[in-house]
Image (cartoon, rainbow, N blue to C red; front, side):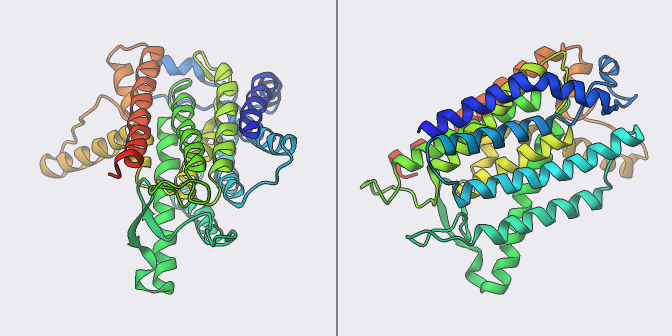
Length: 365
């Protein structure tokens, strides 16, 4: 518990007080945001704002986690290190993408296939490592079973280990790509993705701490949890949340620093990794409900446009602009109004997810 509080607190202090120095550095390096001309006019004033602030979040989270563990005299667990592996790995993919954008001053960084390939490489490495490192009870950080509130009877290794590992890597990649790209798509307004990530990743502080209290190694309840490192999962989640809160001070409207793909891919990757090691993979649909909503708006917009263009020769749109938050901006909502209302949606979605998680333990849903 002390490591959890220390990790979150130290990460918050680090990002809150070090961000001005990062902003100065990024300005010196000319790492300014490129803004598309076809976006909302209010965004044109954001051109040149320092980006790649995800480096601040990653650094703050790492310092907070390792300092918290050191102060409590504990060693890092395999599960937490895997979350860090995913966060840093996808953060590096985002960093390369951001660097290409700022160097070339265009909205396109890595090609689609390059980004997919690099995300797949990180996801595959995570998948293979997550099935290693069994503890004294034989529990590994991840399970080959698909999970909701805990492992379901559907084991991907049912068809054998060869096919099973391919299916497992594919399943992990689907989770990672969905979560990381979902956060990336939501990162279009000042503070939106940061605040929503605080809610979503904060859910795993609660889930991890509850799983620790009700672990099968310590609890006698019939619904105890078979999770390898639940408390340490909560510690790394708290450290990421603390780093995001400190960063949000500078990222809220008008933002003085953007997280960029460096931050959005890293946070989405961490969210997916936390779902895997906590055995709540399908529950991520609710916990990350806001990210599902904005991503769904993009899918609907593109599908409807292509369908109507194929049928009538003229493509039509469902929304004024996608993702969904830009639609409401073009309808006349102030940016801060959109952000706060979307935070409310994200918070309610997380509350529903955590509530169902607790209800499953109470009633065995």
